[in-house]
Length: 300
Ligand code: GDP
Ligand code: MG
Image (tube, rainbow, N blue to C red; front, side):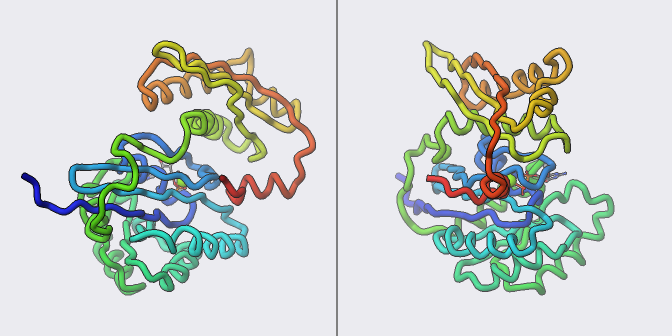
């Protein structure tokens, strides 16, 4: 007979763009749910990652990044995040990058100082540190910034210290049964996840060549026996962008399709038949584009 308590609750992953929030969530949940890349605007939507163990259900909330130069937007976004996400969670994990402290980190800190929930500081990317003796003074400097519930050096990529991080998080959750069925991994549909995987491959493959106007629309998502048949449209704004996405002799689109299919096969655990089409859609308003590229679009 088990008499250990079960805990459950929400954990917000907060930090400036590119610090590793989505990578951390994927590693903690053990599935690639949130797309990642070197580009700051990768995560556009709030997404839940649900990890259920024998003793706890941890519901991670991954939040969108924001444009590095949009200082006022940073504030606005952080304030909104503070009210809409942070207010509803049991604990916050504040991510920073080992040995770095930027103006954007400072803005995030100023918001977190005002929240009523415990804040755990996760010092990420420690795998990159060449001289290990530099870490301790950095951790000491961080400990003076605010009263953190804990400070942990981690590597979201290599998996370093993530078990410890999970243990600390669980201590701050409520004593409660699970909120979600134990086999549920996210609040997003397979259709949504499929579109996001394609967008990740596009962002990783296109470098600076393509603006953020690009969107992916799943036109067909059919379940057949033990395979998914997926048709997706990649929307761009101009013919020359279409040519870039397709690449010489269709090579780039082929590669994007192959990489996306492999990721989907892993995530959905079945065969995937994927067809990609690139189409030009003109007349997006600048406002609309700017908003969606910044991840400000309100999702249902
Ligand atoms: P986000 O914008 O905060 O969600 O950041 P991402 O999760 O998209 O990660 C941004 C970049 O940092 C990606 O290229 C990741 O591979 C990289 N990254 C994330 N965590 C680590 C880490 O622990 N070590 C290293 N070396 N790179 C990392
Ligand atoms: Mg992200």
